[in-house]
Image 1 (cartoon, rainbow, N blue to C red):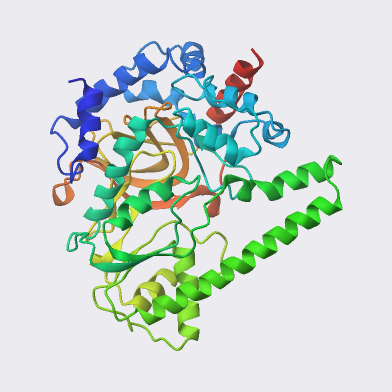
Image 2 (image 1 turned 135 degrees about the horizontal axis):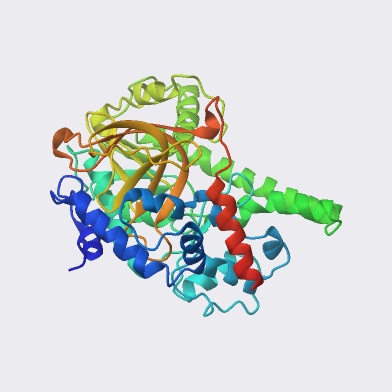
Length: 452
C-alpha cells in the first residue's frame, strides 16, 4: 500500500486523530512526494510553477511552500465567462486547476452557472461552490473518490466532538441546510443529521436548494448595468424576485422558530451557524422563552461566522446559556471548503485536531516562509496553509486567509496529530489581510493556459 493510500484509508475510521500511525510525519512526507510526482503531470499550472521555482522533488516541507495555491485562485475565472455564458471557457478554466480533463463537460444549451455546475456533476466533476459573500464564488473540483472519503471523514469529526452521545435515529433534528445545493455542506449535513433524526423528524428551515447564482447575481447585475447591458426593467424584476424569496424565507423562519419553541422540551438536535443561532435566541426570547428552558439533552451543532450581523461580544456565551448547552453537547469543528474532512473539536479542551491526511503548514503572513518547528514539537502562530493528501480532483496545497495558533507534538488526550488552538480571519483583525504573492503568480499561469 502506498503512503497516500494508507493515509486516505484513515478517513473511513471512527477516530483517525488518535488512530494515526506513530510514524505519521514520515508517512505524510512520503505521501506528499507521491502526490507531487503524480499531480505535476496532470495539472499544468502546478508543473509550470514547479519549473519556475526550481522544484523537481519534495525533500522537505520547505520545498512545498512555493507550490501552494492561494484559496483565491479557485475564483480566478474572468467574470465575463459567467456574464456572457461562455461555459466552454469555464470548462477550460476549471481544467487548469483540476486533476482530470474537463473536456467531457457538455455545455450545449447551458443557461446559468447552476446549470453549468449540474453539467459538471453529470460528467463526473462534482464541483461545489463557496458561499460567495464577496459576490464571486470559488469553484473546487472533486471526484467520486473525494466524495466517498470526505463525507465519512466529516462525520467522524462531528461524532468525536460530542463523545457522550451517539446518533441513534431518536430525536427531532432542526437544520438550516436543504437537501440539495452547490455548497459542500448540503451533502455532509444530510448524511450527518439523517443518522440522528427519528423517522419524519428531520426538520429543515427550507428545502429550497442553495444556488451559486443567488450569491453572484447582485454583483453581476452591477457590472452589466455599468456596461449598459441591462436596463431598469431587468433590475426591477430581479429586485421583485429577491423580495418574494425573502418574504418566503421569513415565513419559513417564523414557522421553524415556532416549531423549535413547541419542541423545546424534547431532546432536539439543532444545527445552525452562529449568526442564525443568535437570530433564534432573539426571536425565541421575544416569544417569552427564558434562558435554559430546553431539554437537558439538547445538542447544538454550530460554526462559521456571523456574516456581518450585529451581535454582542458575548453572543456565543449567551447562545449556549439560552439553550442550556454545555460543552459536552456542543458539536463544532474547524474547516474550510478547500479542506477534505474537518479538524475535530477535542472535548473538553476547546482545541481542534487536524486529520492525519492533512499536513499543516504554518506560514508567515506573506505566505512565503514556513514556521513549522524543525523538531515537530512546539507552538507556532501564523497563516494557516496545508497539504491535503486526500484531495483527488485538484492539487492539495492551499494557503488560507486564517491566522492560527497550532501546536505540534502535544499528544493531548491521545491525539497524534497537530492541534489548532486559536483561529481568526485576517480580514477580521485590525492588521487586515494582505495579497498573497503566490495568488497572482498562479492566476497568471491560469490566464496563460486559457489563452494557449
